[in-house]
Image (cartoon, rainbow, N blue to C red; front, top):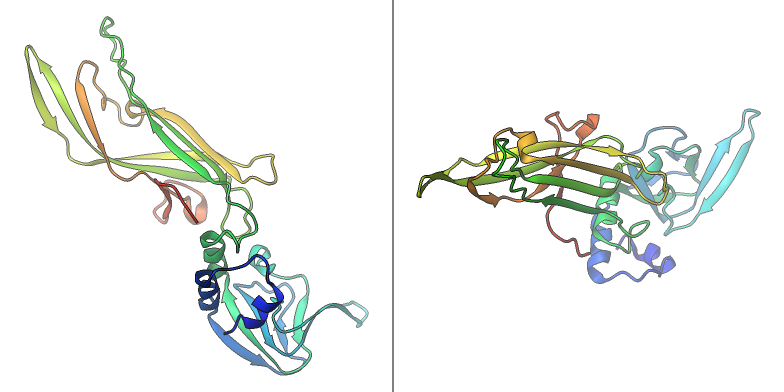
Length: 271
């Protein structure tokens, strides 16, 4: 196993067999380096973390006057650049002192591990999301159509995938539904079922002052605000809801663009 030495020197927290298997399978490849060969170069963008399997490496900075400052010596079982996951590059270099063998774990795999296991993440998840739909009957004694369905969206501890900083962009509420109305016609009623329709609601997010909590996203709106005339006062209405989804903002942090993917769905996450 690639992780034998790592697990031997990092005995807490205790990982269960499934977590160990997930950790082991997250490595993409291994590679050997000769002495003095550079493994990680200063300020070069990184997409993977490096686990030392055999040999010894140094972390160092070359000074302007030609001297070399040794920052650390690593032994087998050490991740030599795990902090490259949030930082994406290092302010120093890593080189082999002896013949070495290393294993590379892509940053995407690090992200998947931190999401899947509370033992492998930097802290407990603080995300809570809710979408609440209400019912506003209106007042039949007034000529105005005041009936509506209030919609409230709240998401907390929203962070960027790369550096886990607060997310300040947009997310999108995607709500699929089918509406059945009973239109009053004297003493009778006419039933009519619409085709399945989708609501798309952009939700603004903002950074929080609490450094331990990610961004917060929220909006209060209503069905008639999103699609005027959806709710008609005096009509009985049945709503059949599909799965509630929240999409991320994609590469440009905007809800309106087409590259967005599902960020959260309804349910309770139990690690």
